Image (cartoon, rainbow, N blue to C red; front, side):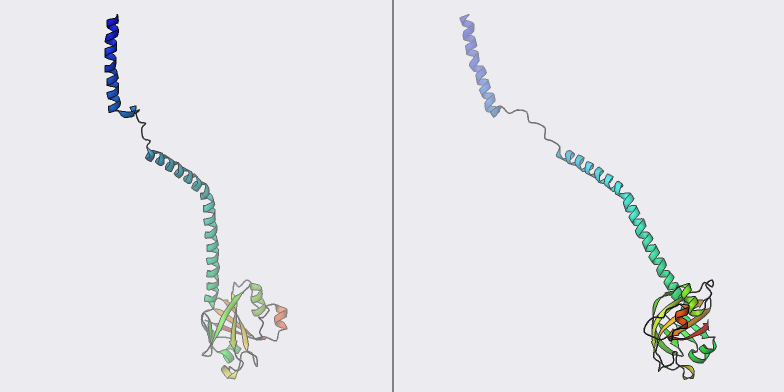
Amino acid sequence: MSFVVKILQIEWPVSGLFGRLCKNRYPGGYTIPQPIPDHNRVQTRHRHAAQRRRRVLIDCRLPCLNVNIMRSTLHRAVAVSLLLCCFTLTAQEKGMWRAVSSNAKSITGDVALSDQKITINLMTFTMVRVRALDQAELSAAFDADSKANGSGSLYRLQVPASRKFLGKNSLCGAEDTEWMATYVVGHSLQLAFYSGQKPPLFALDALANSADVCGTYSYMN
């Protein structure tokens, strides 16, 4: 029995020696390292989640964006229509017009209207379009038929009383001509000239009692 104990005592240092050798070979007794996390996969997952959230937000905003786009498009279409309407009205007045009424033949002769100028008896004057005239105003100024579908405008211009036309006549006698109204229906044009610093009031009573009404002339093209 004592012999066995001695053998065990002899073998034990060998095992301890092997343990010491292992410790020298693998100092500290390192444990198995944990796997390195795949950061690229995590970042990709987060990026996909963020893209899904943005897609949801965009889908929610699309109805509002579509409404705003439709509203702005409608506003632009209305503005363009109004501009085209104004251009059409002035385009009807442009061109050469032959004197038809007796006073037009004896005072102005033939006239020509362009964008910002009127030519009377080969004399050109600058004019500025102020606004369009409605049917009630045209009816008061030119005794126009409201069903005739005509159009007209008010212009500001400056024709001195000293400027003489056919037969040494002026448009407004001793007064400077300050305003001009137009009325176009088909191939017919009427011009009405006014004096005074204030724009004429296109109402029957006002025009009948106004001293600024100079005369109305008729033309054809």
